[in-house]
Length: 277
Image 1 (tube, helix red, strand yellow):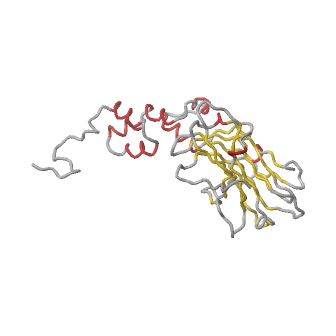
Image 2 (cartoon, rainbow, N blue to C red):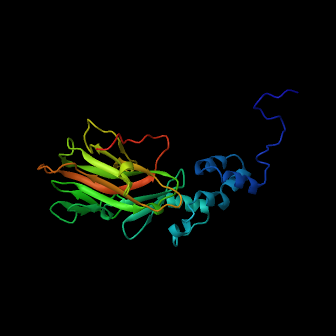
Image 3 (spheres, rainbow, N blue to C red):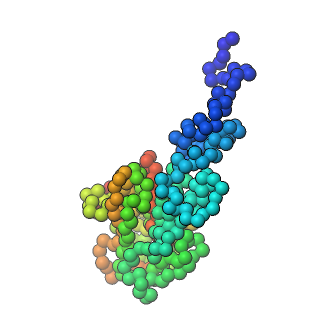
């Protein structure tokens, strides 16, 4: 009797569901977290295998035990999503979490962790709590003639062999001014690698030039500073910066800085850098 291509013979065995659960788990561990969640819906055997610690241990970073401290979970799958949804906050204003789709490590630096020019001068900047912020306080620019902020992190804090991008996370107050026509220079890359560092001009608030700026699900805005590729066995300093190109006599204000987020970049995205400024 002929069987239509792609159809399962009546009464025939479901080959994959008949595999031992340990074998299914070993195969699924070579896929991705979204794939494992989808495959878990196929059958009872698949659900058990896809939810097993064997699978989710392969998705967690090798040093995941250093991230969890005393966090209590019933399975590695629960731990994985716990690290995605509930970041680990360190005392120096750095927040570590996992990218939900890849399991790669991400870092968010609070505004307090950044080196902000005149950031400790109360006539220029104020530090206030905002409910939508992940951190206890954010930096609000009252007024200043010069804008500059920067910070560095070690590449060993991130996952190796990964294309990352750094993003400034910010908001504008209704009273913001002078940012709509004054571009700022943004950059991100390895310290000492000036040729490979991506630098470009962006407008933070201009409605006529929104290239690279996008809204986040948490209600903040973000704009890409640059991208860089981490490598296996390499530990280098990564510098991120936002600054003006020239000093002028126009005061600026109304910028709210939440921090800088560093996360894996989709390989299909194109670098926004168009050359050195």
